[in-house]
Length: 269
Image (cartoon, rainbow, N blue to C red; front, side):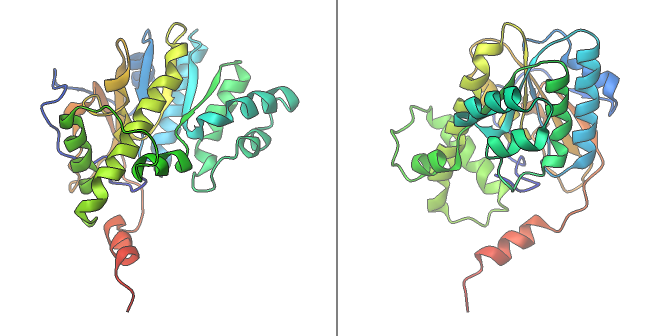
């Protein structure tokens, strides 16, 4: 889900726990919240520049104070790990070369992610390609891949989240396939970060993947800390109880995503 409101969903009783902590929108506070955690899911609204700047500043503080976590990226597909490692060796410090070598999709606004890559290169932190590719996700969505062993409660909650995140404009029959793909993305992200839990790892991802109830944390063996960066939006229905902590930032200026989606799916003629 790539819409700005894609993390909007009904919070279910799955994984319900203590009320999340509201953190100040300041690098120090965010760095403190990440300190000492083996696994951090650091959420975002993908097109919000203020959120990216805050996260980058907080991670830099964390590293400057001695932490050396791996940085895992939803923005890189898992099969590009070898290409990333080669690019680092061949042209150290060349971010554009690394992104091109890893076949970074043009849909990502790479200017927002370059500060994280630069931090990893400057401090020799692992860069982890963590995501399920679009092609593999399509196979899962269209049942060309093996069926997932998923609890019915998780499946239902994912379908509800996808429907809400797409403004309740999708046909009902499309939801199961999209839910299967989303779940497999979460499982893939969890698998990618598992080898780095000993040294510490921060997953840079959308808020929907950071949800404790149905997202990546559900598939992680062991503990993790989920932090969402959400927008100050009176119309939002963010499932804040699905995170351990959250930060509220200014809303990014953008067209109404529901209107854009409605125009895209409107029948021709």
